[in-house]
Image 1 (cartoon, rainbow, N blue to C red):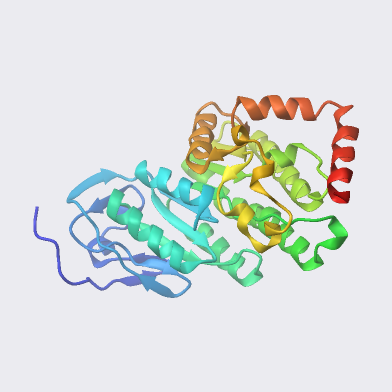
Image 2 (image 1 turned 120 degrees about the vertical axis):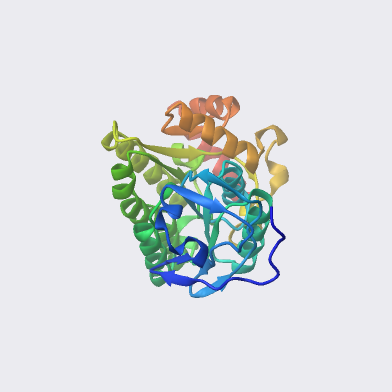
Length: 323
């Protein structure tokens, strides 16, 4: 194995994919196999800004394809990125916080030797969403699409700003639909691929104070189930991942900081992001379309969906609002 180079080899762009000179002679490096030598990684796409990290090792392996993860800067999205990189997949990290993405990309490139691309984008912004959609449509070897980007709001529907409700529709529903539509044709052609739409157990319930969140996650569940039926026997799997309370930054945002208190939730209902992702992959192997994370949540959902439980939920909600 030769010494690590001190400089960075320049590259050139081919559409939205950046190719280094070491692979320019054979685009199959990005389709059939990827070469890992002591040369820099392909530039990371960051809406026009490129960031480089070093390739490590000196070996060749069959490519497992790329995975695109939205909402990848923290929590479940970052856990998916680490899991997929550990499996040998190149990862395309999409989120609003470029600095977080660049840090994660550097970590994954150094630890696992995989190609990484960074796209700083707000999927509630039509221009940014179109950029990501075109990246998905033009990428030559996308094997996994993880629609994880999302957020919650606190308070009754009319109390939440209309703009936030519409943003939630775009991020949870429109973005998932557009990215799935962009990814599926090539996955069908390859007879292989997987789409994971990160939903929530809230999509299986009706909870006062979460009208938009429950509704958008319900859409993701129904969309995923219908899509899975359409894609049967194509080699493309679809999953709606329905986690419960997860230790992430989700509840720390300004939208929820004043209405949610972690101490109100029993400790046994909380899961780590890594465990949620592990359950997702186990469910994917078992062809579970609606993947509820853990037996405790399956039991809880079954109980809460009993018809006479709904009046009790509404009553408890009213008491909380009055308290």
